[in-house]
Image (tube, rainbow, N blue to C red; front, side):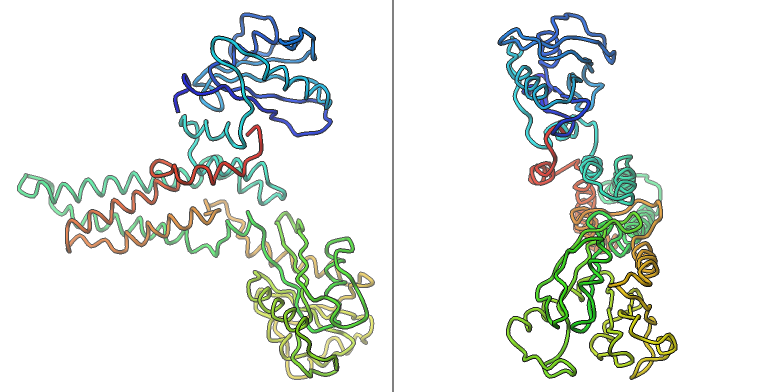
Length: 464
């Protein structure tokens, strides 16, 4: 992007609503001109803070007094001339300041409101960051948990971007070796270039495949792990959901089958984002002791519950303590090694009965006794669920794939490298290497990105 011909844009860079401070950012060739018009000051040294009064150029009225800063290109966030204005954060002050900024005209042109993500898009286009860093900035702004913040910070510092740059540089070198062997086979070149290329390609492919074999940890942290509460009707699943959420998110009734649809609640569990889903009670028609007829609405609820359980990262299987030691076969069979089994309504059971095996054999993992209604054992349930969520979320500092876009591009790269055979058709082999390099370029945004830029930046907030 040419900073000499682009529009000058502005936007509030701080949150909306009443606050102590409101920050406005201006980027483009008229940024310095805006400061001069608003303050009446002609000289601004780069990166120095000035106390100033800001006046509306249309009316001459002083809007507020505050701070002004100027960052000349290319040493700014966007790589263009950038100005920042800091004033008091009242709604009227913020509205008056934005009106005053957009009222500025001049030889360099006027100022328009920025589109969502336009500041970051200009930073990308001017080479201030790659696409992985731009996406990480959006993730950092949206982060709601400690794990999301840490992951976004690692990506923003270049964790994945630097890794892809290294792979791409090595690929380019391998392409050079391979094509030299093809084009200059009759020249006095070092021997074994084809074998050398194959070894390097194998190493790169192995590293990429290792990153892809991460159980989608990065996506889980960014989007939230899905935990499904499943079990037979009237086991207390909705009560457990309300207890974990700390509010009445689901209707609770003594009548079996109250929950028909999937109810989702977002939680911060040990610093990890979790999407907790309450589901309809799973049973088969005629299952005792529920004699309610099998109607189409319940059938759809059971179908959705089964699908939610299948798609979940963790299943929290809730058993009815009032029916213990009888365990519905379908409910018990849904527990896997990463899942948690809770024996609810433990206040209705003698402690000696809880320790015994259920009818039909031992449960693995064994159930945790709890009473969601009275809060007994809930601390242990939360601790055990947090431990499973933490294990599935990794916890290492290694770079991770955080978006489906990254994963798709890296999978295409790995597939091209797998097809590469230096001893087969040289033209096809060279094309596979070029396709692999192109796929890596898509991750960091070096080539073929115009068709995805709008998709990436449209979800940014205004002022970023």
